[in-house]
Amino acid sequence: MAKNERKFLKGNEAVAYGALAAGCRCFFGYPITPQNDIPEFMSKAIVDAGGEFVQAESEVAAANMLLGAGACGIRAMTSSSSPGVSLKQEAISYMAGSDIPAVIVNMSRGGPGLGDIGPSQGDYYQSTRGGGHGDYRTLVLAPGTVQEAFDLTMLAFDLAYKYRNPVLVLGDAIVGQMKEPVLMRPAVKVSKAEGKSWRLEGKGTRKPRIIKSLFLDDGALADQNRRLQAKYEAMRAEIMAEEFQVKDAELVVVAFGSIGRIAKTAVRKLRAKGKKVGLFRPITLFPFPDAALAKLAKAGKKFLTIEHNLGQMVDDVRLAVRAHADSGFFGVYPGDMPSPEDFEEPILKALRRKK
Image (cartoon, rainbow, N blue to C red; front, side, top):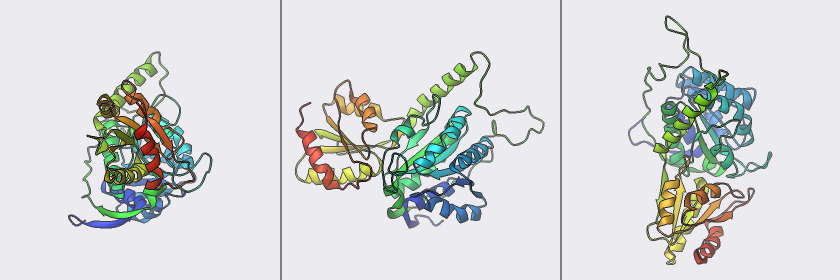
């Protein structure tokens, strides 16, 4: 790839390019709108790159294939959308419990149930609370632009192997379907030694290895959970967020992903009218950037959380700022498509609110 090359891509295509640039060599998928561009693109591109593409018989099968590839130390990925990701949760719990690195992309859609094929942020709880059974977490990255869809997918593979844990890239139908110029990054060279101390590759002359999530000896599962919890705490080193004109803001709007992008336009328009508002956009949803929000709350800011759901991330915002402030909430109902103008009156109302 030429240096400083730019491509005009859909968000879904950017995810696929980012995965390939990160050294992804196995993709397991199953069709569901609005993420179908990813497996369609990968069906040829990953084979051309020397990898393997499998359209599995179901989302359940795709996730378990991902488990197998990750256990062998192969950079691998699956992608789906909301109800499809729900079906993958058992395998994701097994991967987390077995310390298996993997990347899962969710271009979320409206729900509950089959809902529609339009955008929604209704999968926040599922993404940040583990989603499946047991006490586990996935590191969650939330792109708000097509460039971030590329960059964060690349990053997801490095983080998956750094922590030996599933990493989730959470977009939506807006991020997946919009097109923007993307600055392409050089492909990484994946070390042949990656995962060498634990991956399954045939016994040879060494001692046998076991990758498992079943711990039946007395105290073994408690020890495993203590170790996993320490790993999740260590992930706080990866926290990322965008702060836009928050320094002198009286009100800080908190929004992620595509809604963060739309809210940013609303903030710009209100700033032009002299209103002291700013935007805080979490990029890592887990770990959540609570310390940065707490610092803003301590400085006397008001808060309004805006989401494309009926109120999910607002719980984390309120927990973060609770020592000094609260957060209002404005939710866009899944099935509606918001515009910056839709956010102006709720922001102004929150600005007028007493602390």
